[in-house]
Structures are given as C-alpha cells and as structure tokens.
Length: 403
Image (cartoon, rainbow, N blue to C red):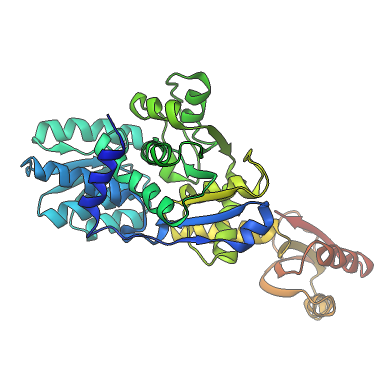
C-alpha cells in the first residue's frame, strides 16, 4: 500500500539524480485569478518531465532486489525517457514501446538515452498491451507508467518538495491521465497537510478518470483525442482510481482551446515552454474551473515541457488569430498594374503589417480580369481589425476572412 514512508524512501533513492525543481510565485497568474499561485516547474526536470521520478524510483527498487535482466515500458514519451534514463544509469537494457503516432522529437529523445524503441499501436493502450506481452516473452520487468506503487511513490516526492517550500498551501492542482502523479501527490499531501484540497484536472478529450471519479467505479472510454498527449489515456486504472477516490477532493475537465490558451499564456507571460498535459492546471485557473475561496494559496504542477515544435507552432498561430493579433484575408483585386500597390498602401495607412501574401489569378471562382490576394496581417486587437474592415469597405475592396 502506498504511504508516506514509501514516498520518503523514494525521495532518498532519487535524491542524487532527480532535480529539485523551482516552485515559484506567479504574480501575473495570481492577479488574473484572484488566488495566490505558485508553479512547480517539472518542465525543467531532467528529461523534461516529472516522469523521471517514478521511473527512476521503480528501477532503483528492482536493482535493490537484484533484478537486472532489463526493463520494458509503454509510453507516449515522458515515461519512456524516464525509464530509458534510469536503465542507462543502472547499466541495464531498456525497451520502450511507443504509439505509432508519437512525435519524432520524443522517439529521438528516447533513442538518444540508449533505449530500444518499438513503434506499435494506434494509441497508448494498444502499445501497453503489446509491451506487457513483449516483457513476459523476453523475461524482462515491465515498468508501468502509473499503476505501480513505486512509480506513484516517486511522483509523490513532488508534493514533499512543494510543502517544504510552501507549507501553508490551501490547494494543489495536478494533471490527470492515468492517475499516477495525482495518486502519489495526494497521499503525500493528505499525510502532511490533511486540510489541503487536492484537485485533479483532465482533458475533455480523455475523460476516463473524470467519468470514473464521478461514478466511483472504473469507466473506460472508446477513444481519446487531445493535444495533451501526456494524459491521453483511454482506460481507467482501478489501482490509481482507488487512491484518487480516497484522497482527491475535486476532479475537473478542460477543453482543447483552453489547454492551447494556457500553453500560449505560459510561453508569453511566464516564459515557460510547457506541453499540453503540463498546462491543464493553468488552463483550469485561467478559465475559472476551480471552486476555491478568493485568495487561496494554490500550487500548480507543470508536469512536463516536451511539446512537439510543430504542435507549438500551430498553437501559437491559432492563438494569435483568436487574440486578434493576426488577421487572415482574401481580397479581390482588379488584375492590373498598381492594384496590389493600392491595397498595400491602404494597409500601410491603417498600420496593418503584412507578414504573408499570395497572388492568385487562376481560381475558378474568379471573374476574368480579377485576382485573389491572400494576406496575413499583424494587428493590434479587435478594434484595429474592425478599423481594417471598415477601410477596405470604404475603398471598395471585396474581401472575406479566413479562420
């Protein structure tokens, strides 16, 4: 049974390897939310995620038992890197089974740590089934990413660090996928500060644990779809659900747009690169999903920072459009000399910076003698965009907006 003593032993095992990450006051987020917010920056952890804690503790425990035949894990990336790092540290073989859709950056990260990678399955659960069978056939130990007491104990060391620095926290907000992180942290929190609220945040695109929490029994989903790939777990673990039902006070969901806005907020306002799974706690604060008294002292775990750069680029682009800092137009011009110059001059007058432009005179929806100009504009907010629309109408330009 997971308890504070097991978490204490885990802390000793990982002390010389795992970083004691910063737990810092977030003034901008505090002002916006009405809470006193502190961010636990596990995105700055070695391997870029909290998962190193649990993986290292589990493998260290296996080594203490004399089990050195190698380890196998299934993971979308962060647990994989933790297992690969620990296997290399102890000089044993590591094999990671990853979903076929895993971003290349995470695959390469695991291989660079010396582990063998097997791409198998359309999602985590299919990879997991293959990995369990593979470990049994090869005579190796399977390291579960969350439903393991030693793994959960390693994750619980995060809570020990947070409470040492801020012993008067009123609440802690923790991402939830399979439930290993929140299980370990909740056990540590309730043993040291029983009155503290433990709040789990899951993605609406992967709601199995939220559904199970509400029903008080395991409920699996048929599929998952979320940009928070680190918590994209389809099926509920009865092992972690037992701890969650016993120790967690609230469980909430955040949507995809809310997660994306939190990633962008952390990048712009906190200067932190945080992946989707790591951003859900901030998403819950920004979008008012927490039920806490005003002024509460709240710790939020930023669980990881291993976001695919392609996804980050997409989030930035969409975020710019949604926040009225970028505008995309298709303008119809008469296809003759000077027409494009006239349009560009109008954009200069309204102080809209053209950052991308395309010219099309062959589309079938064009009248002969016309051309489409597609432009992306840097803008200064909603009022500025309306001024641009008005100027285009006043000067006789036909246009449509793209979103």
